[in-house]
Figure 1 (cartoon, helix red, strand yellow):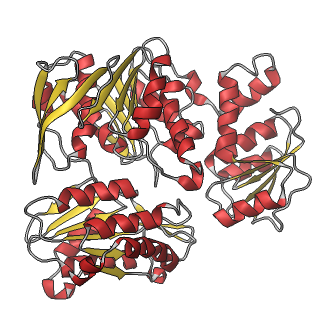
Figure 2: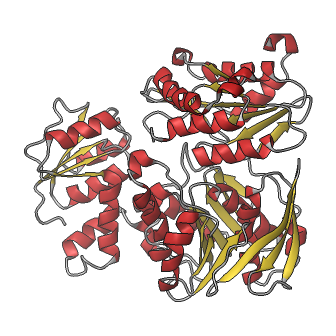
Figure 3: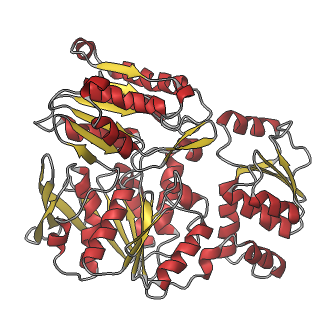
Length: 552
């Protein structure tokens, strides 16, 4: 891996993964040419190690003297394409992929005879999780295209209320027992180095169970390498983050690694949602090669004869709760009734893992605890019920947006559905028209605005969403006043999203549901390269309390 390298170019060298890769290379005395837009402690240390660091973009995207080119995925797509076009014969990877290649080679003992490389890897701290002794602590990994944060939080809440000492790492932060911790902006899973620090604190507090929300980015870029989970939960697999993964097949392969690579080989348990076609047809057939026990979950009555399957029967959903009978697929008499105190049929699937793992741990009073669960911050969180309902939700994929809109569209009490959303800049562009189509199908009024446009033009992002909306909306719906509004002025930064939410509230009538989607609990909005403070819950509550004439 390293023997043929003389010079490596690293673009975005001050970032987390890039810094650790560049540090390994520098410790191995491989020449590193690094570029970044800002100087930081990482770039300063790399200079001290002998790297050639320039605080600028390259003058040219051609690097004829380099054996290897690494780039950050934060680089705009057009520049990534320029790198490949200008260096057709040079190995080129996004830095997260190369980071994972190093860590995987280390895990497979490919360097065991090379003390020089082993020393560099140890000194760089690129693979810190291999050195942590979890002892008898139970590790639960959760991944999926949607629902993984809610599932992770439900696991933490359920197992904590059942008397176990539980810690959590997830998109909305984390918990070291009952202490709240921050895990960063736009982050489901922190870096391996940050995880190592958190895990040590969790173990010092004698955590019996640790729940780790594991994003596809984290799995693909080596952030959880070194972990072995007792339980692996797969909620679903949908096209997502295609700016990074490129194809659904890569998304699928990456999420499967939670079982194929990170599940304990001798006692690992897999819990999978087979209502999801990709899991049912492509993941499930492979599970028994890696898991000693497999539980399947389904709302659609599906099961496999060789698994321990559970199906939800008699599912009832209303304004504020859902209820169902959880029945063994093998024994229809083995059934238990559950009430979940918040809306959304999808939450039945999200809670299954909590019930199954609690049963596996032989914990009592599970239905009583499930009935006491609280909604997860920023996930289908109802901030006002009258005269109209105001809902904060994190939905930022076509599937999750459709799910939340459909939930409220189908409630008998709903008059109209109004949705406020956007899509992120420098991220998956394929989903933009599909998001618009979901809104056209289920929302009476669609309001497009900013959701982290970054360096892209907000108007062009909204153009793509509107294109999907117009392709889906029917003439009859337009005659019935199905409407789209746009808030495109990114020059006023976060105020453009404030204006869009204010517009939604001004249009709302008694019985309407206003859903602000895409940001949920996130703490910033990104314009250009600046992360600006943002708290959507606080904004919504403030606007809801404004005098009504100011909303006109």
